[in-house]
Length: 73
Image (tube, rainbow, N blue to C red; front, side, top):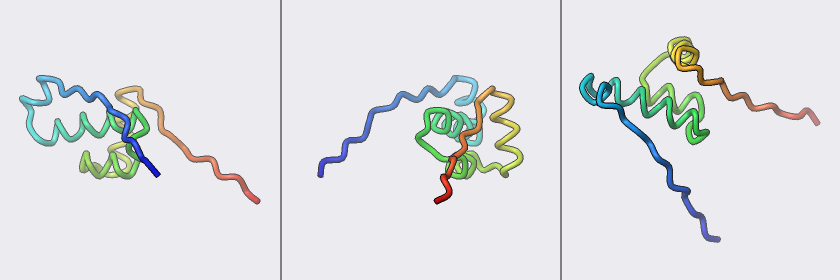
């Protein structure tokens, strides 16, 4: 079975580059989460933030939280 990884474009702002690693990690985490590439947990770990902190940052950037709806059998 062939599995292809879809290319993705990520943009790191010059502000983040100037602010250092933590700002870059946060910007990447937000983009990867917004594009449904990372889960909430993966993105917040990359950003090195608590659940509460990452949720606040998502709100500040107007990124909606993704929820998985599970069907009950």
